[in-house]
Length: 155
Image 1: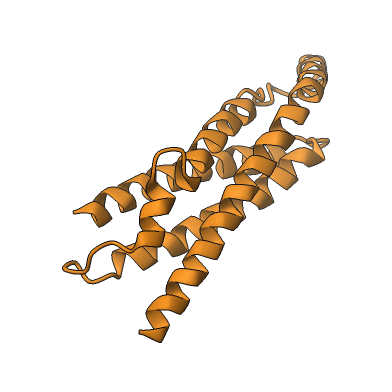
Image 2: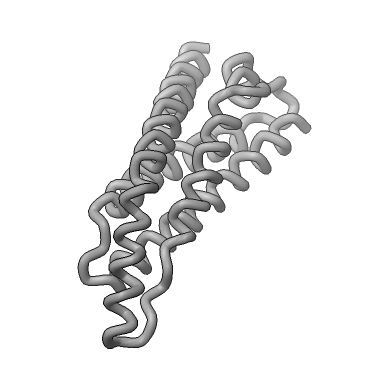
C-alpha cells in the first residue's frame, strides 16, 4: 500500500514538471526573443521528470508483497527529496506560468513582450535558485535509485 502512495506522489510531481515543460515550449516557440533561461528551465525540468519516471517505474515494478525499501522510504519522508523537489517545481511553475502569452502581432505585442522581459529579469534569480534546489533533489533521488538498484541486483 505504501508503494501506491509513493507512486501517486511521484505522478503528481511529474504532472507539475510536464506543465512547466509545455509552458516553456509554447513560449519559446511563440516568442522570437524568448529568454534563454526558459530553455535552461526546460532542459533541467525535463531531466528531473526523467529521473522521477525512472523512480516511478522502479517502485511500480517492485513485488507487491515486498516491503518498501529503506532508501525509498527516506525519499518519501517529510522534508525529503521528493517533497523538496515538489515544492521547488510548484514555485517554478508559478514563475513560468506568469509569462504572458503573446497577443496578436503589432505594437501591442512588442509592449507586452518588453514588459514581460523586464519582469523576467526580476524573476530569473528566483528561478535559478529553484532550479538549483530541484537539481540537488534530483541528484539525491538519482543516487538513491542507483544505490537501490545496485542493492537489489546484489540480492
